[in-house]
Structure formats: C-alpha cells, structure tokens
Length: 143
Image (cartoon, rainbow, N blue to C red):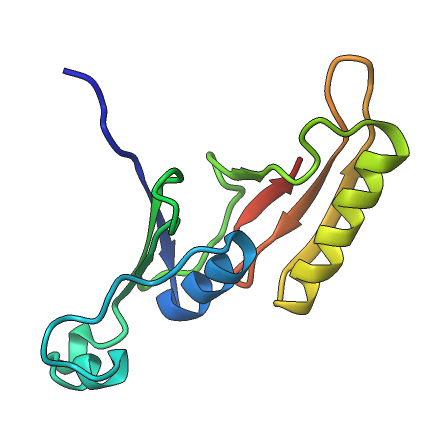
C-alpha cells in the first residue's frame, strides 16, 4: 500500500490566524463551507463554545500540495521545530538572481506578519536560503 496524501498539522494558539497566513503565503484556500452555512462564522456559532475556533484547514487549489491543518493547543511554542516547511521560491535560480527572489518573497511575507531570520548563503553544497518564522513563531525556510 502506498501513501496517497499527506497532511501537515500545526499546533497553535490561534488556528485561523496561522492558517490564513499560510493561505496567503502559499496560495492555499480554505475548504468549502459546510452545507447550510453562509459563512465560516455562521458555522462556528453553531459549535459548542469549547470547539469554536479550535481548528482551521486549507489546501492547495491545484491538488498537488499537502493539506494543512491547524489545531488549537493550550500551550505556546517553546522550542525549535523538529520539522519545518521549505517554501521553494528560488528553484532553478542561482547567485544574485536567487537572492533577489528570496528577498522579494521575504518582504511579502513580512507584510503578512512573518519574521525574518538568518540568510544562509550558498556554500558549494547547499543553495542559499532564508530562515523565517510565521505569525506564531513556527520556523520555515525560503529556499
């Protein structure tokens, strides 16, 4: 049996805030509204109070990328991620052209609430990449 799909799950304090950041960062979309609801707010109001805002999900509209799921947890992030996403914006680019692509995407994501980290320059083995954090401090790389 082979794996057909992968979902990446984020533990977070505010699932919708983190999820909407990643929708903008990756061009992902939330799932369709449940039948009988005009908005996600309407759906949320129908949930028990402890379940309101407890999760958010989004997916690649092309169907190629993994589904992302964001679930509320009581504790905040305290240590470095053991797993992170690489957002590939410089694929096929080298040198100054690659750095310009990384910097342009970094500027766009900072406007969405991301935080810039360290720029790691190509070293003959690894490509240049830029470390960043999303709106709740989850590390990711622009590569």
